[in-house]
Image (tube, rainbow, N blue to C red):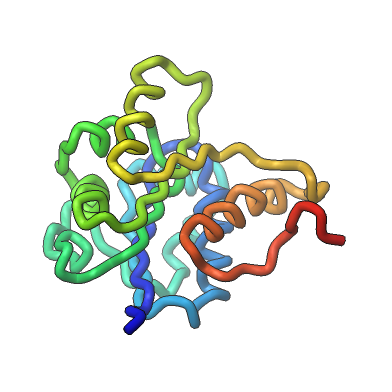
Length: 189
């Protein structure tokens, strides 16, 4: 019997708030494909959102939200069966803590749980250039079963706005999560 998707979206303080905004907007429209969607944001994520997007609209989403230190959140345990976690955007510090198993907040604990349960962890990394430390951390997470999806927009679809460019990354993330989504497909007219 197929279990309904349970998704957690974690937001770190990396630059790229537009990506998580587009992700949350798209997930809102895909609500028939999951039974639960929860959000955890770092304090820096809120500050960066307000700076980059000029508002605090992260408060306007009608999803369950948890503080970064709330280890009583259901997805802090494998028994809650959250099967998809997206860290968007994912800072290099968060990547490093996930790669080394340091569960010092709810984001890193949830990622640790998803990896140990062999479920889907997608890290939308947002930094450039990359040091060898970053590359090795990406390798470690990949070897542990996670997916590294750099926030690198594509231009095949000829995006006309920053939101459309960000959506090229988020559409790929939604595909990686196994959700059905209408988006540009190479070779289709």
